[in-house]
Image (cartoon, rainbow, N blue to C red; front, side, top):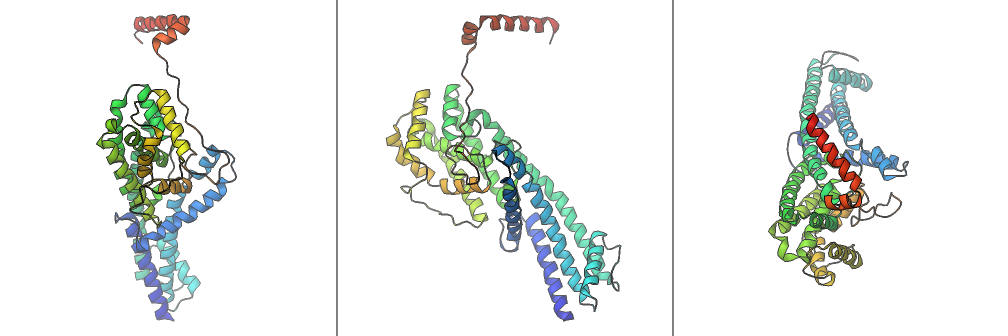
Length: 387
C-alpha cells in the first residue's frame, strides 16, 4: 500500500506539473494533458451561463458573464494547488502516516514554501519540494497574466476601431454602406488588410491560451466574434456583388478569417469540415441576402451584380465560416446581431445597428441658421480667449 501511494503521488504531481508547463510555458494548441484547462473553462462557463439566466436583458446577462474569464484563471490555479496537495499528500502518506495528517502536512508545506510543518513526522524533502514547486507555479502565473492581457488588449483595440465602420452590433453590409456614405471606399483594402493581420494574431493567441475565449469585451455590444464575422461578410459581399473593386485584400482577409475560426474550433475539439462544398447550404437565407443588397443599392453602393447573380459566389465564401462562427457566437453568447445565428438563452430577434444621420454643414445652416450663428460666435470667442 505504501509503494502504491508513493507511485500514485508521484504521478499526480508529475501530471499537475506537466499541465502547468503546457498551459503557461509551451505555446501550443491544447493537446493531451493541456486539454484539462479546457475542461476547467467549460465548467466555469456552464456555471456563469446558468447564472446569466437570472437577467432578462442582454446587458444584464453580459454583466454576469464578464467575470467568467478571470474566474477561470482563479479556478485553474486552485485546481493546480489541489493536485499538488493530493500528490504530495500521497507521497507523505507512503511514509507510514495517516492520510489526513499527510494532506495537512502537504498543505502547510505548499503555502508556506516549506517553512511550516503540520501533521505527523516531518518529511523534509517532500516539504521543500512542495514549497518550491508552488513558488514556481505562482511565479509562472504572475508572468502569464501580462501575456494574457496583452493579447486581450490587441484583440479589443481592433474591435473598438470597427464601431464607426460597422455599427453596434457589428454587421457586414453596414460596413460597406457606411464606407460608401462617408466617401471612404478607397480605405476598404486597408481595412481588409488590418483584419487579416488581426485574425492571424488572434488565431495564435486564442489557440495557445484558450482562456482568452471567455474574456468578454469591455462594452456589452462589442464582440470580437461579431467583428470578425462582419468584416468577412463585407468582404464576401464585396467579392460577390462588386468583384472589380474588391481587390485581393478582401480574398486574403476571408481566407485568414475562416482559418482563424477553424483553428479555434479544432482547439475546442469540434468536428470541422476542412473543405466544405461551395454549393452547400447555409443558414442565411437568400431573402435576407437580397434585402441587404437592396439596402446597398438604395445607399448608392457601386454594385456590379444583382442579388440573384451574386448569391452563388457569396454562398461559396460564407459556407467556409458560417457554421463555426454561429457556433462560436452562441457558445460565447455574443450580442444578437443580424446574420450571427440564434441565441437560445435570449428572447427576441436580432438587434440592428443604428446608423447616425448623414449631415453636412451647409444642410445644418439651412435648416437651423441660428445654430450656425451661435457656432461662428463660439469660434470667435475661442479665438479671442485662446481656448
